[in-house]
Image (cartoon, rainbow, N blue to C red; front, side, top):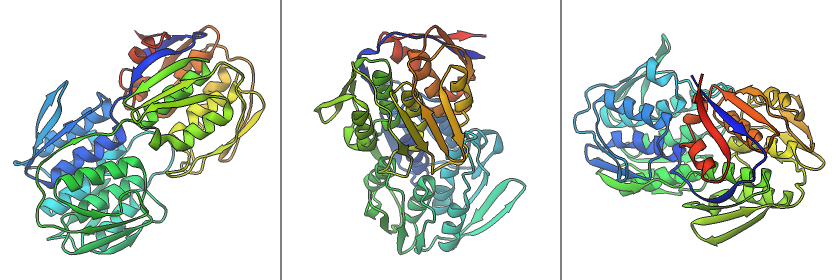
Length: 419
């Protein structure tokens, strides 16, 4: 099983291109099931989760053409299977996103209850409640969700609490429902907006993308389209944190600062210098002391939970004390014990981590527990003295495209090793 070996102490310097967003790619791929027209998606990242979703579409009957430079083309004119099996779904929670499109387009689906990172309870009850409100008959048993509907009907539904995949699933289902659907307390993440833009390009009638209320007028059919996936804001912010952590100077290209206002503001308050040379690039540098800050995760436009682990590393090397409060997932401090092995002074009480900044971390063998935790351990290794060997890096391959290659391009001493 592969591991990542990092020798720390070198500042990140140089230019790096940000990949397409995993969390925008997966729903766009699922949305292709809504039409028999050809869907062409560009700026697709090479990630394990994307491969899993393509495998899932393939077993439904999708004809998929992959071009390394041009993207992915999907032809769903011969969908023959409406079941999403456990062996695929167990590894990736986003597999649940095929439920809404299959039910809306073909009137049936059978999908295994999803898996993914063990960062806490992420129930699909709101997906089920929303589809039932649209007229679906849904049964649960044996670890599967079985749904049927002659044609979904427009409805008014309120998410409580807000959910990204729930918003995306019902949004896709509503595009082919009869009549008007109003979804309230929706997720406002840029990835949801990107999905709405993709659906609109397919002929969907959607108002309110980027707000908490979505209004969808159902249509009889959708067409094929071409759509470019937005840049990955979580990947971009992870590299930004790395630049500040190592006192480096990097330029991110194909990156949108507009989607990163909360992390940018927090990094600036810690002492980073962040500039926006144009609408698609961000320069990040830091050569002085880093000041500790408090932060609390929350749905967009708040501070992303997917950056909490990376920021915890940064605060652990800052001056002063910071308090990090996790409000989205109840089990997302599993990386703390590994950071403590490297010398981080972190104490967790419930959903709050108290971090006392120190001047150094020491390299050590550590183990990744989930996708973003694995990124935090790579960052910690970049700043630590000596060698850090990170095991279970299959987690990081789910969400970061060739992370060791990109970091080497920024002068990091990092390599993937077998063992």
